[in-house]
Amino acid sequence: MNILIAGGGIGGLTAALCLAKRGHRVRVLEQATAIGEVGAGIQLSPNATRVLFDLGLESALAAVAFRPDATEMRHWRTGRLIAATPLGDDALQTYGFPYFHIHRGDLIAVLEAAVHAHPLVELLTSARIEKIEEARECVQAESTCGSFEADVLIGADGIRSVVRATLFGPAQPQFTGNIAWRFLIPANALPAGMIRPAATAWWGPGGHVVHYFVRRGELVNCVFVREQSGWEVESWTEPGDPEELRAVFLGWHEHVQTLTHHARRENLFKWALFDRTPMPAWGRGRITLLGDACHPTLPFMAQGAAMAIEDAAVLAQCLAVKVAVKLEVAPALQRYEELRKTRTAGIQTGSRRNAEIFHMRGIKAWVRDRAAGKAAGNRLAAVYRYDALAVGAKSQS
Ligand SMILES: Cc1cc2nc3c(=O)[nH]c(=O)nc-3n(C[C@H](O)[C@H](O)[C@H](O)COP(=O)(O)OP(=O)(O)OC[C@H]3O[C@@H](n4cnc5c(N)ncnc54)[C@H](O)[C@@H]3O)c2cc1C
Image (cartoon, rainbow, N blue to C red; front, side):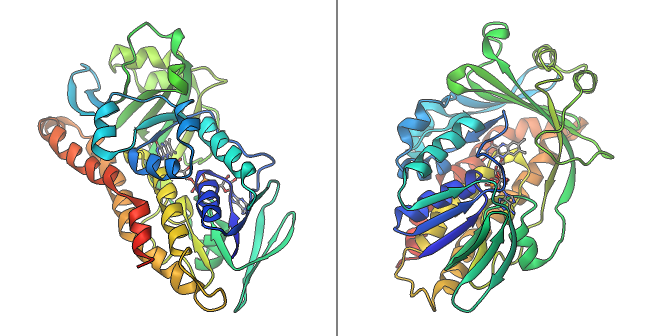
């Protein structure tokens, strides 16, 4: 089939590779002038690396990633270890695939190189999809670089998806009441041993802080989150004010405060976090959605991109069955939705729930700390164990 993808982010590029692997011709339209990602980190859990390795990206990813030993939850002021989950070799043995920390730019560069190397994928930049029309036997899209016709259109165009708005109207995502600051620090600028080889989360009243190594351990990715209303700018490029960051996290553990002293006007970004409640439907006819376009998620389970990657694998398998192009595309897309909606809705609500858990105060926080270890470990195991390739394969039986 000829498949058109709106959006060349992590979801769109992964979908292009999964679909091309199954013999489809894919065209990706990306609105930006060049494929790229912001300077920030991303955690890739085994449920995501499983799909990326199946695309042959294992060595390219391993060359730029950092493999953490564990996730660690710490008390915001004392630094006491509240709970820990082993990763490293443990994750590899348990799930068969590694847990990676990676710079977003490095991940997108790996995906883009694979896309360029694939003869069945064409990637166009400065190509913003503006209008979509569905006919009985095809779908047409008008973009800033021309009109295109395809058998299937996939909206992988992010939280403000034009494809989603065309299908279901202009309802906006919701502000979650959380503000995040993010920045990267060269690892050698920090006191030796201060950053452990783990994804460390500091849980505090009304906020939390996450940091971890990326790019083979050369950089430390920092995300500072605070409940705050009255400011709702959602942009990856909105500058942050280091003084404001330092004031908000005053009184936190000295390691946390040391990190804030490395935030500079030129490397600090601030944005409001949005999500949506799970959508009852993702598509219509020959059109469907994927990734943040249909299930934007708070990053508090570190699973938004992983969900887009899983979507890509399942969708490609649903379209790998011998679909009679004229008649059977819509049922195949419907099957994809059915296979994915419960899983992604669980991650959306779980991420919201984590906002409450991470930010508890007083006695609630005390009770949480005593129960945290086992419960968190069990929940994460279920998330990481998911095999999108096997789930998708079921659609072929
Ligand atoms: C602070 C933070 C930390 C996070 N950490 C993690 C993590 O550790 N692990 C994890 O798995 N997830 C994480 N996430 C979530 C993750 O970043 C997103 O879920 C993921 O990037 C979604 O990918 P996507 O391809 O669906 O959408 P996007 O990345 O938004 O890509 C959409 C693309 O579509 C393009 N586009 C938009 N409109 C059009 C149009 N009309 N025509 C053509 N192109 C268009 C955009 O330019 C963009 O390139 C985090 C998110 C945040 C905010």
